[in-house]
Amino acid sequence: MEPVKFLLVDDRAENLLSLESLLRRDNLILLKAQSGSEALELLLKHDVALALVDVQMPEMDGFELAEMMRGTQRTKHIPIIFVTASNSDQVRRFRGYETGAVDFIHKPVEASALKSKANVFYDLYVQRQEVAYQRDQLALASAENKRLLDETREYARALQEADHRKDEFLATLSHELRNPLAPLRSGLEILQGDPSPEIREKIYKTMDRELEHMVCLINDLLDISRVSKGKINLQKKPVSLHEAVQMALESSEEIIRARDHDVTLEADEKVWVEADPTRLVQIIANLVHNAAKYTPFKGKIRVAVKSQDGRAVVSVADSGVGIPADKLAHIFELFTQLEASARGSDGGLGIGLSLAKQLVDLHGGEILAESEGPGCGSTFTVALPAIEAAAPKKESCSAQAKPADIQPLCILVVDDNIAAAETMSMMLEMEGHDVSFAPDGEQALALARKVVPDAVLLDIGLPDISGYDVARELRSDPRFDNTLLVAQTGWGQQRDKDAAKEAGFDHHFVKPVKLESIVSLLQSKQRASSLAS
Image (tube, rainbow, N blue to C red):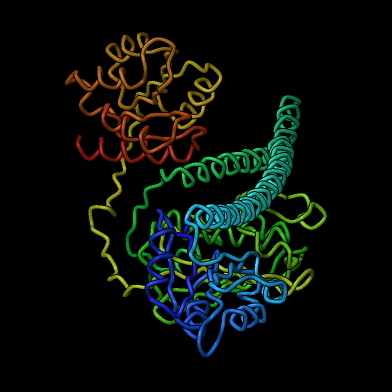
């Protein structure tokens, strides 16, 4: 609380000192004035709880001062006690009370009466201060409660929206994962009926496409989780943006061809960036795939690459369904996508654009979405810091050497999933290799010591000992120094890859592994063995 202030007005200094000595107490400031004009000056600067005013003063008497105080909004409510040495008559009393006095005190002043009356006004002022303080605190508390209530409502709305989007996402996920399963099951039933070679080839392509679609969905889910948790480490190097765009277009060729889109590429081949090549292609492929998905059949997609203000810019424009204004601000948020009527049968999970934005952010770039509205198409633009073009690398003569005499390999497949192991073994045998199979770690070690394989395709999560332990055991035996150890596992985070490398694996593949990846790896092993012999 601020100190309480009394105003003492008397033209005689000794009277002021006398009043001051009688009224002095803690938390009380006594303002003294020897004239009406001095008193008015003090009242302009201070809030006063009580004014003790002498009636008989030269120039301006106490009644005139009181009248002037009552005429001002700031001072009209200040209680006034007149101090007078003259006898009290009815006329003077009436005039005093008319000017706003609350009491009269006669000189010589009785100390106890003065203190008692002054204390009343002191306490009233303190109480008014406390009420004002409590009122202000109540107003602040009310404002804070309103702010918290508004925040709570906003959080509730956001949670409700997130819950709604989560439900939509789970429904979409269920739909998108079931979609590829239907042709896979149908394809298997058709193959069991011994169809013609033409139908068999068509079924193989359909099943491969649908399986690849499922793998892409799962990989997108894993990627968005890794990015959100900061577990993606970019492997940056100089990359031609033109080459990255070409690779992205190749990866989206199937949906482009299926929808019969007209795609044009306008690219400055001198534009280079410092980026992770795989992730850069993934960013652009997501944008191209999104454009193809939301553009009706026989639409137009234009991809442009250029250098602008020290940045490498790639834009993907389409003649598709466009983006409503209310969706444009949220288009990069997780699980955000257009309504089912707009996205058609190939809806996706609504994470592609969010993943693209997060990957662009990791590269220190920007991504922007533009659209004039429904039916007007859309344009997505990615801008990354540009660098000088890298010098072309010369291909070594040794990399071009292709030995003619390629021998089949002895391969050991280790997996407790019998169906996965059998299908992998059959595929490798079709490639001409000699394949053995073990369902657990102990049998794998026993069989490996017996046949000493050229390559081991080893699952990590085995029922007895882990694949890491099997790899360490094999690497401790000199007979397996030249054995190719390949991890096949459902665990694909960076720590899993690091653990595989530490255990002695040469390569780490995340299931499901494409046959061509394994075949390419084994062919490299075959070439190396032929050169060594």
